[in-house]
Length: 343
Ligand SMILES: *[C@@H]1O[C@H](CO)[C@@H](O)[C@H](O)[C@H]1NC(C)=O
Ligand SMILES: *[C@@H]1O[C@H](CO)[C@@H](O)[C@H](O)[C@H]1NC(C)=O
Image (cartoon, rainbow, N blue to C red):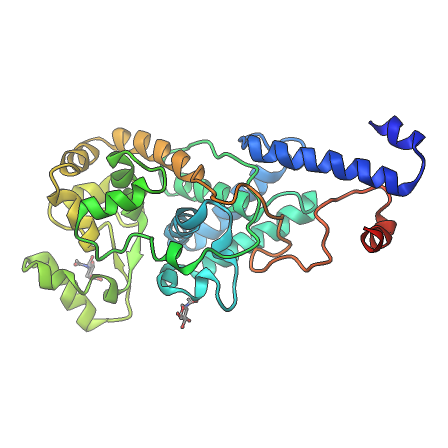
């Protein structure tokens, strides 16, 4: 290839060849996400992400839940494309479910991106960094390891309002409605719904999100929650009242005792299809961990309706300026303007 472009002489021909090479590389990207995707172009990636996540979570363990929630909110509407990180008018962050996104967890991913790009150049997407950091946060809080497919491109646009509205609501009381929302995203097994809800093992939430519980249930736990909220309305409540900061099966033990905070949590123990799985996970942390790892792999491969196309963002919070050309290291870089003008 190199010699043929050399012999054809002109910079334009070289660039056309380069463009062809790059477009076939882009096609390969689409075909094969892989855990080793960045082994050659950014061998430091995993260690940078791991040490950044460990440092951040040592200071504030609540970031683990923040990262998990962001990852879910990213992947569910239109695949794991970092669309949720875009800021500004008309972005997912300006839509209803945004209140559950922790600003500090969003910022952590952007901070890691800056470190990774400083070390390797702009070759790793925010989507890939988000997926890796979420996995490392799960491990740091005591959860299972799992492999993370890499090679996702960052989206050019946020997801549309109707797709974001498809995120399951904590007020949903019907397992069949929850299961349908999951099925539509390729999470067809009812165990996916139960296992991914298990991410609430490190979750916290504001009082307005479970204010419907007291109306549905009159029990000691509801009264304690209500008392907490009337005393300190701004304080977040733990979703796993057994072991709030540990990624384990305490959430499922709490559910078995009727102590799920969200209506959607309680639905899992009341429904005939999901209750046996909740009980199994309450008995066996290993069973939960195995299913969680499988379900996270499925979530990471959520369908991208427009395909795996996009860019490597230079800031996770915004699209690249029009000037940034995706092709790095083009030999005749100085002549790109001329090429654009002549094209
Ligand atoms: C969420 O969106 C609403 C508007 O829908 C906005 O007022 C609010 O500031 C946003 N919250 C965050 C954390 O971005
Ligand atoms: C209520 O607040 C107490 C004290 O902060 C806390 O230990 C408890 O987990 C909270 N929630 C419930 C349901 O009691």
